Image (cartoon, rainbow, N blue to C red; front, top):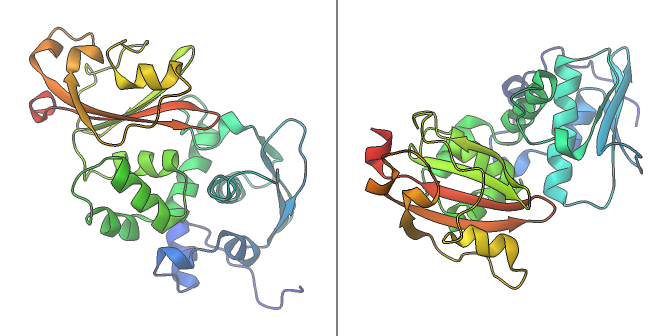
Length: 261
């Protein structure tokens, strides 16, 4: 399809959504947004990455590996849009480990992840939806993810960052131990989760027993099962864990409010 309208010059997520008249999560069509800014989507096998963007001038192509989860694909496209907005003129190839992890060491990938989150889950809409769910648990997480058509992991990161759940923390574990964690802004840094799962935690069972089912509801557990801090035995927290295909086990922790102060 040949373009007759001028390409937008302001690629900030809020500006794009406003210029397209998007006011509802269901209207965030990531492929239409990509076309609007001069990009085409091409699904093809990629040898060393999950997605990449190449461009010349103000036109480009986003290539994504086909056959993945739709929510993951949407985030990958939005991530590459972030590269187009921030790193135009470069050819960027993104591995699966680069996308959606909000890397603390790779500023380029972190910027693209943040752009994708802002585009797919704009704060004004996202916080409005989150306020319908007073408690952050797997049920509310799935409800919000369904509204925005985003993965559980990406949605949970956004909910933890929303400032609406001040005692929340999320942790991802694989067979080699803790991979990364993210806490609400007000959670003190000395509440740093243990590297290895405690055998008393439900997450341990979920990670090591293929027959175990995702935890249907949060349950209480001593904070010392998750933290080595000297004050941990004084507190009780809630834990709820679920599997993420290809990523291991993700746990939602809600700390005792006294742990946050």
